[in-house]
Amino acid sequence: MNQWALKMSSSKTGLLDYNLNWHSDFDECLEVRDVVEGQYCSVRLKDMGGSLKGKTFREMFVGVCVPKLCTVEELRRFWNYTEEKFKIPVGPDFDEELCLYKNTPMEVYEIDSWIFILLGAIAALVVVNTLCDVCLSGSRGNPKICTMFSLYTNGKKLVSTSCSNDTLRCLHGVKVLSMMWIILSQVTVTKLSSININAIDEWKNRLENSVFFAGHYALDTFFSLSGILIVYTHLKYSQEGKPISLGFYTRRFLRLVPSLLATVLIYLSVIKYLGEGPFWTRAAKLTAQNCKTTWWATLFFVSNFVRFENQCVQQAWYLSMEAQFCATAPLVLYGLKKNLTKTFRVLFSTCLASTVYTFITTTVTDIGFVPFWDLDGSQLFYVYFSPVSRAPSWLIGVFFGYLLHQYNSKKLVVPAKSRTVSWGVSLHVMLGLILYHHIFVKYGHNVLRSAIFNSFSRLFWSLAVCSIIFNCTTGHGGIVNRFLSQPVFTVGAKLTYSMYLTHEAVIQFFTQDQRQSGYFSNLQIASSMRPKDIFILISCCFSLSSSVATLRLL
Image: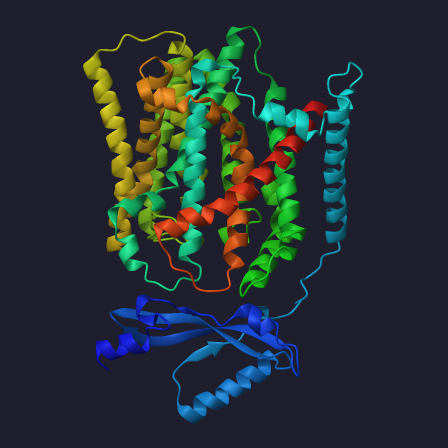
């Protein structure tokens, strides 16, 4: 068939633009309740083996509306007859989890009711505490118990722009911008894998869109910030005669657990009741099943050792790895006190060993570099989730944390030419690492290229970010430091942890609830974040209120 004929015949479906999701009207199908009741089935067509416009089609989804009385087995028999009669070379896969009708029951766990009671009790406690706090506000007799879970008191602390250490204010801006980048990248990845009517080939090949694929560097920024803060804080308190004890680390981990536990419970028993859509039931069921079996890995901070597709709160792998790095912090801090030179040699040797390990692992296993593009979920375990591979980012933070403690109270006298070179190299390295994703996306997998970038890119990224932070805190940040130190970032930085926990669930909610194919573009990515931001902020406020209250009880 001629190309013009193919284009005309596919103009409604967008097949030539790689639209492999043909969906009927989901809500209209489910509203059929006259003689028969409607049932919407998303049928997977696989092993197509066809090629159009240079593209090979292996799998696609087609939405069909059938009577609810039709079972999956009957649909299979009907299709087998049709395929044999008309010689149709397409292999459909009918799945009961993808056949939905009005009020399709969700799988209920025994613990669901108890979780709803617990969450309801917490919500009631927050409301009562807030009312008590507001009514007694300003009176001397206002008991402390009225402010523990109060949105009013904790909200005032949340929006406070006071900072305990003004010299490190720029870290707040770095945190907020990195968190925004993570959310933007997650929205992009989710939208790319959802129902789109247009081709993504042209979009992905545009150089400026490399920023959407490079969001994983933001996690390395957070690893570096963790290393900076734990060393800087320890040395500062030790200098003031207040050495950090085991209680400091215990308090740190306990501060993370309440919000993380609430997230696990919501993933297990709440999310599945919140939405409805062609793929919602299956996705929600998988999420609940994962949390039922691997909740312990998330709460005990070892989820990065669980296969990605089996993780409960998938984004919590970062928290697990950071906890593992922090577990080694006492050894690092002891070494910095006892033998500085030897300790830095060990840190350098560790970075070198990590680089060699990552290069060999990438080459032997033939894995990619860009997550969810040439590095799929089954390959994340080898390098992306490996603390051995990620260690350089944290160790570089440790090194700069020591430098910041030594020089942050002084304004270093640095020649103008040296400052220019430092800023120029840092910014060019970061820009180059981001834009080079264009090569990975456009030209496909190359194991040598992946090995080089898996081994060195995160190390150089962390060096560049830490160099900028060092310049900002030692009086050479200029307009960049003034921007990163804005009071609004002080408020936003308090939200980053809760935003990190909730952002993926919110994004999945709006995506899996999608009924019709959309048009994928940068504008759609930006517009799709608006309702998510509101939902995330509400979740964060509630989560932060609970976290602060827990801290007061410790």
